[in-house]
Amino acid sequence: MDIFQNRYIIFAGIAVFWIGLASAETLHVGSLSTLQSAIDSASPGDRIIVADGIYTTTNPIHIRRAGTEDKPIIVEATTVGGVTLGGTHGFTLDKPAACIHIKGFRFTHAAGGNTINSGATFCQFTRNIFECSGRGYYLQIAGYDAQISYNEFRNKSTVGNMIDVRGTGGQVARRIWIHHNYFHDFTNAGANGAETIRFGLSGLSMSTGNGLIEHNLFVRCRGENELISNKSCGNTYRYNTFLDSAGAQLTLRHGNDCLVYGNYFRNTDGLRIYGDRHRIFSNYFESNTKGIDMGNGDGEVTNGSALTCHDRPDDCIFVFNTFINNKVHYQMGGRKDGLGARDVTVANNIMQGGGIMAAISKTAPYTGTWSGNIEWKTGGAGEMPPEGFKTVDPLLAADVNGIYLLQSGSPAIASAIGAYPYVTVDMDGQRRDEHPDVGADEYSKSPASHKALTIEEVGPFCKQSAITE
Image (cartoon, one colour):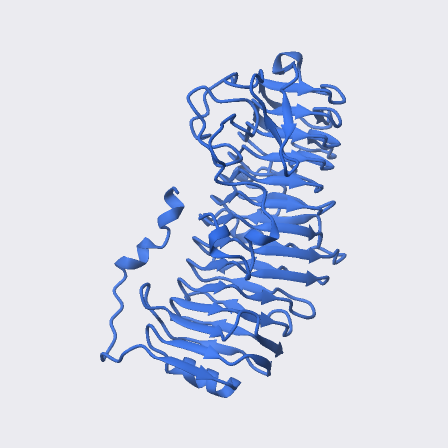
């Protein structure tokens, strides 16, 4: 895949020594007390299987044992979704917990009951169902190298994140991998702090997370306007699908140097950006209120502004995206005494149908370049200068899933302007050639490796054959 494919290889270099040569065991338990006892004495490679049924907790289920990369400690339900944990708490993973896999549970206990605490490393929650009650988070992560995969996070209407990534001191949790999860039906909580995923905090925002959020499906996630709130540096958001989440955005709220590519946005509020040097490419925006919402800053962190400010976007790049029938394709809104945005690049995008191409507020300064964009049947150029685009039919046609792709003979083919060497793939995961096409799609007859996701391809019950790693 790329550098993320081997993100766990680092663990192979950590020496973990154990006294004795006891063989791994498979233990079957049928009560919370025997589950806790089995966990407390678990060794690398042990498998603890909980009998299907409903269990009511009054205390956290603590895990402080360590497995190894090739011999994790697995705690799992007999069948996926067959064990319901109600009551007050779920699992709490504390230092020195390592290589712990929590699998197949249905969590209905009070929110705030599942945590991977600082010092717990290489732990996984996989193929679980989260539907916790009351206010608070569904899952909080502060330990490094956690993997959250193939879970379902559903039916929340209260303040608190579905996933809350934190850290220790000034450092956000590092190398968190969130993939192939199904997030849905987070109704408006009526207050801040109701993100589907919050990745970091204001006070952690200048630390680098190197997080990877990919191949997740978000449907009707409207807990607040920030569907995802990125609040740290160096994270990657790719190949996710955002659907029917009116008024909600993927927001780069704090931090710098993030990558956003290969994502699909339909009937959302698009992507909002603050911070510096973000690279946004090969994304597909259709029927959103906004495609790109360029932030209008009210502070400049490098000049000493508080980390809680809306940091002025500097040196951000938006290239090779496709915008279809959005109310406005690209905008920077107004702000009293705003600092605007500086040195922004908008190039090689297709904008078709919908409202105006670029709505840039005159209440604050905006500087940058426009080049190589294609316009067709939009509501007009707005503030995009004439030299920044050409009006020509890009010959897009909807595929069987309604996604607009380039057709043979399109003027977008091999017509991109400028060099963007980091743009190596299109929205389908297909390789860009040395003469890339304008827009999110690179015309190709080869099979796509990625596409807009459906519920059959994510969550605890998806088949392995449907998963593209």
